[in-house]
Structures are given as C-alpha cells and as structure tokens.
Image (cartoon, rainbow, N blue to C red; front, side):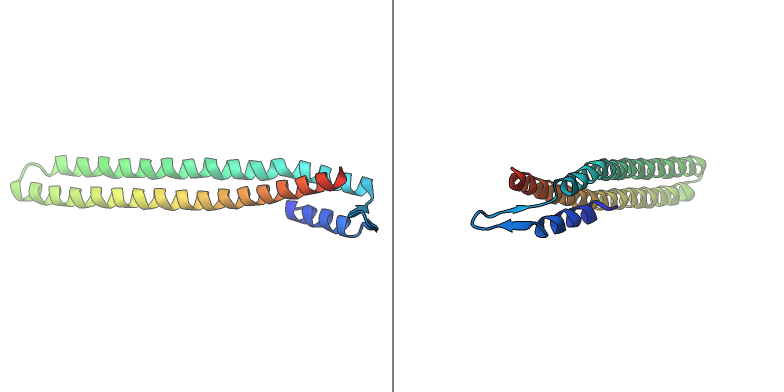
Length: 145
C-alpha cells in the first residue's frame, strides 16, 4: 500500500473516532492506529530507497554524458591529427573540431542541467511527501498524548 494511502487511512480512522464532549479529544481504536503507524514506518524506507536510486541514476547519467563528451573530444582530436598534412584540410579540420567540441560541451551541459532539474524535481517531491508525512505523524502523536 502506498504511503499516501496509509496516511489517508490514518486520517479516516481519526475522523471516525468518537468525540469526547467539551474536551476536543476523541476515542479511536488504538490497535487500528498503531497498525497504520507501523505500516507507515515500513513504507518510509522504500520511499527513501527510491530517492537514493534517483540520486544514483542522476550521477550515472552525468557520468555517461561526460564520457560521451570525452569520446567526442578524442574522436575530434584523432580526426584533426589525421588531416594535419594539408593546409586547407587542416584549416577545415580545426573548424570542424571547434564545432564538434562546442556541440559536445553544449550537449553535455544540457544533459547535465536537465538531469539535475529532473533529479531535483523528484527529490523535491519526495521531500515534500516525507515532510507532509512527518507533519501528520507529529499531529497524530500530539493528539494521542
């Protein structure tokens, strides 16, 4: 069961509790609330693992982009070396190498920025969910006290 569904069940359980007049308190089935809290505790590590996997994937994508850029640079340097013999060919090779290097750097930068934005968005969402979960748990614990 998803974490948000568990929290909704917890909220429904609290809403179904019997109100105690003039006290602002309510009676709920203790075992039901404790079971839901236990399920939430068990689910939290999965969400944390998901966030960690996203971070690892981000690092892998960045590394792959850098490797591709380095490969493109090596290929460009190899092509330049092979074309050095003739002046006109050398000039064209230098121009093409500059374009290739520029494109490789641009592509690498775009991939890196896109990956960071994606990972940041996912981590932000996970952080928000965990924060909301923590707030609900704190409120529930206060009510239980």
